[in-house]
Length: 390
Ligand SMILES: *Cc1c(COP(=O)(O)O)cnc(C)c1O
Image (cartoon, rainbow, N blue to C red; front, top):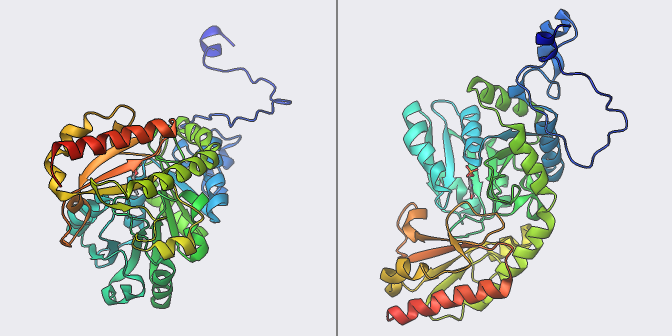
């Protein structure tokens, strides 16, 4: 070979004896084939074969296989974000004339997807109260093809009766799916209670370091895997193996992180109930959280996100007071090592007004020293009381 050819042909080095604990990052657009016949027959390589970079490399497939195992799924598909995973699922399952049911405490961009994108394409949606349980029946007509759930709802924290919803859906031949980002597969396994699909925003706890955007869709039915992958392919959607490698690194510490932050968040939730600035603490582990009994029955524990509803009379002072935070950062997209607070109006998360007013602080516990976090929170709540009468 001449030099100009040599510079584009990498030498094959011996990989025998190279056994690393880390998953290698395999990047590829082109996959090459031994023969023209292999190339012509590449579509027959099945769900686990390699055909083109968009369909995955060994790095992507390692993450998919690891999540499938944790979710008790037949297959998993990795997508560029949690929102992309939900959008691909809805686009693949729903046709014009179909309706999807969504809870009123849903992650707000999903409601926007339904109202501002799918509606114009003939796909309807109906909003149900998160505590509907078997009364979900009242929202069903012949057009309903999919019931989407999110539990606990990520700001108001209601824990729905998901097995009751699954029972109704199965009796009517309707598909069900769950946004399981709060619990992760370590604390809840939606497929094990009969759901057809589970979505995780890997961006949050699996990534664990606030530096990637990824989502996963896991399912029990191989046939759906092909349909969802075809849908993503037709839309030209794939993921970077580098991001998957970061998720594979993050998932290794998921167990210890969830155990720690679950303990701290539950401890803080109990203690914060006594503060005069707080109207209500919304945390699934507290007995007065809507759906607490469902959480006890269905989940293996708590993760680190919960909300506090502040006394409405203190509303005007919230923004100024939060500037005094020293350890907590202000921001959304929780699940990393840093603790976060996101102030939000209760109404931002709720569909039909339910009379509640005031502001929520959504709190995500990170890995800092718990005593220092507690001091920071109490300081801000005390300061809020100092500024305004309840
Ligand atoms: C963040 C989040 C999503 C979306 O995930 P992205 O990767 O940011 O698109 C979906 N559902 C819930 C509950 C979330 O918290």
